[in-house]
Each structure stands twice: as C-alpha cells, then as structure tokens.
Length: 173
Image (cartoon, rainbow, N blue to C red; front, side, top):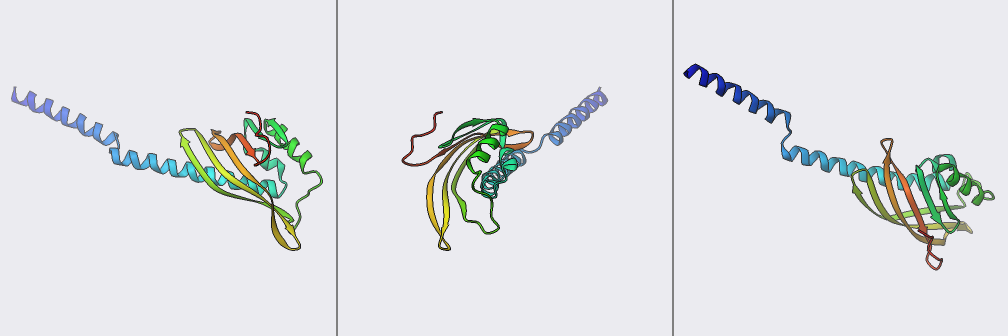
C-alpha cells in the first residue's frame, strides 16, 4: 500500500512539474507581451515615416502598398479606397511635381501618438509640408493625420488615413 501511495505521489509530482515547465512564469509572459507592444509601436512609427519617404520621392507604387487591401486615404484631394485607387490619385495629383535630386519640397512628420490594441491600432500625428524658397525651407501647409491601422499579412498598414488641414472642411468620414 505504501508503494502505491509513493507511486501516486511521484506521478502527481511529475505531472505538476510538467505543467509548471510548459507554462512560462507570469512575469515572462508579461515581458513577452510588453516586447510585442514595443515592436508593434516601432513598426507603426516606421510605417508613418515610410509614408513620408515614399510620398516625397514620388514612389507611389511603394506608397500605395502601405495601405491595406481595403485601405482608404481621405484628404483635400478626396477619398480613395484600395492601393490601386490611392496610387492613381497620387499620380494625378503630383503629375507636375517629379522627385528631384535636390528636394524642392518635403514633409515633416511629427508628434505621433500610437495606441495598439492587438492587430489594430490608432495613431494621431502632425504633418508639415515644406517648400524651398531661395534655398530656405518655408512652411507651405500643415495639418494632422488621424489613422486607423491594421496588421495585414504580418505587416502594419493603413486601414484609414485622414489628412486634415486647418481651415479646410474635414474630409467626410
């Protein structure tokens, strides 16, 4: 009888040890979750900056791929849904403004506030459009972006980007 008890006790201890080993400590899980949040935040910051780089270099093929399959851009030019429509709208809007070896205009993107909730996120940031006048940068326009982002195919993309300019009517939502 004593042997049977010892055998049962050993089986229970082995099962408990296996369960403990299979489940990471709560602190480790918390660190992993926090690390994922930081990685997501950095990836979204990168997306915001890639948007500016692609726009300023007039690389509208890359620019349009920053949007989700059903992504939407909305601003003073109108509202466009899907990468192909967004690409066509930007090409039309900037048809007289090609990228130059020395930039004659560019965007400054600042003040990003990003909130991540799983595979979706929101962001709010400021934009300033600069023109070079007599070799000096001059503010031409400024405003803010309100973004809804989604993880699509393992990458963060714009689901909806609204470019607001003070003094202009807000784009329809």
